[in-house]
Picture (cartoon, rainbow, N blue to C red):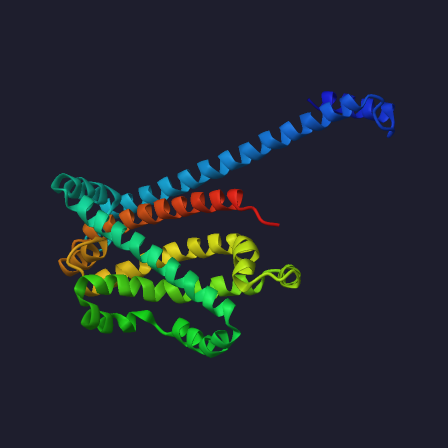
Length: 293
């Protein structure tokens, strides 16, 4: 292999630094180098994925071994096999499916509601500088307020079910408004002034420039909003729900069934990955369809 590389190097030195006589050879050489780069890149990605899987398997193996050898108390930590057994029991009883669907429905509704409310509020803040100046300090205060403190208020005002949506929206909507409004303000002012010089209305500037140019910011906001909405739903279920994954976690903690708690958390992880994947796919579709430069 070393001799082959040396031979190639000598060949290049013998040919000198002049450009190839035939442009087709240069294109072919670049194509070969590009293919080699793609292969190296694929090997790196494959190596990273294998390393991630090996790390996960090692963590689960150490966890199971520690529980079996009593290095840790399995009543406090559970174990991977106990989680698998608990998951099988919940699937057999049909409980886990209904609770997962309840949490999924609450998360999707909370996500859509917070995005719609946040988008409308951000448009108002962009449209009216007076409204932006008046509401800006209130947004800062609301963002700093611990939303869990609002739980009892939502429960009294909205009841046990609707308070879950209230908690989800309260946690995610303020961040949504602030991120979208910040994205609107960062739109190139030169393009807006150009449209204004041609007599464009505020609505036309919003529709033709501001909203298309804010698609990357909108995608980033949706990705952040998925996690915040799920946190809000689980917090709401902790406080008032009679079903759902948050309720299962609370119930498992009260009756000291760590397997039920760990199984519910694992399902939440899978559910959040699915939601994030769907939002990422939607974001790529929006960026492709409404590419704005």
